Image (cartoon, rainbow, N blue to C red; front, top):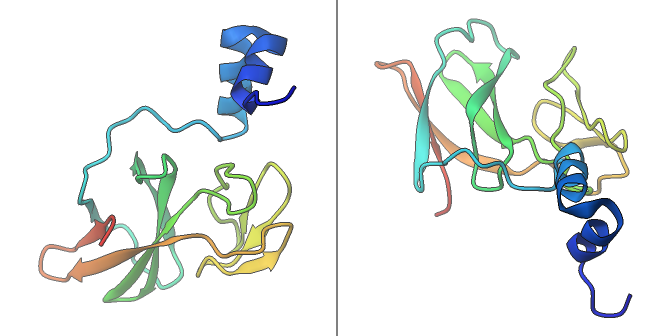
Length: 142
C-alpha cells in the first residue's frame, strides 16, 4: 500500500469503528479529555511517604495520564505515562516498577528504562511544589 497511512490501512481492514477501537486499545490515539495549555495543579496530600505515586485524572499534552511520584516530603516529580517504545499507556507502578502492557518495557519510578524494548525514559514534566498549599504545579511546554 504505497502512500497509505496506518490509519487508512486499519480503516480499510477493520472499518472506521474497528480501527478506532484498535488504536485506542494500543494507546496510540490521543485521549479526548481537555488538557490545560500551561499545566495543572495536583493535590498531593495523600502521598504521605517517599516513593508513593498517584495517577492524575487529567491527561498531559501527549494524551497520556500523568504519574506523580513523591521523592521526599517537599520533592515530587511528574512523568508522562506514555511508553517511549510505541506510545502505549503504561500501568501504574507496582512495587516501584512501571510496566508497559503492550510490549513489556519496564521503568523505575524516575522513568528510567529497566528493560526494553523501550530505549528512552518516560518523559518528565516540570513540577513545582507549593508546600503551603500542598499542591504540585505540573507545567507543560516551556
